[in-house]
Image 1 (cartoon, rainbow, N blue to C red):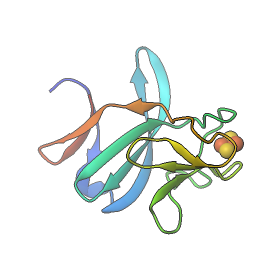
Image 2: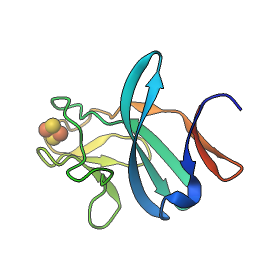
Image 3: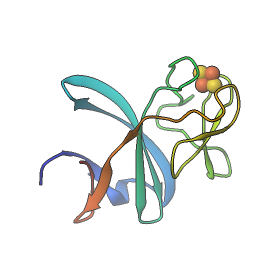
Length: 110
Ligand code: FES
């Protein structure tokens, strides 16, 4: 298996998020992973508005309803599935996606 192992899938609750950092193309990069049941999504932890990290508390990226990603700086909201901003100052822009997948119960950056 090539890529970077981030965690076990069961380390994430079924509708939750976590913060990681990984070496991507030689650069130490902060990222977020969102789990929705058996699906995982990963994005660079940088808001397309002004580039700040999104999480207010480390690893907490979701709204209370856990249906959207929330930027804690100015309240932008992003769809979990594709990272598109659907509300806020950067509407229509996207979080930078990172390919990730689940193999044998572990979450990997591909
Ligand atoms: S930095 Fe994210 S909404 Fe402004």
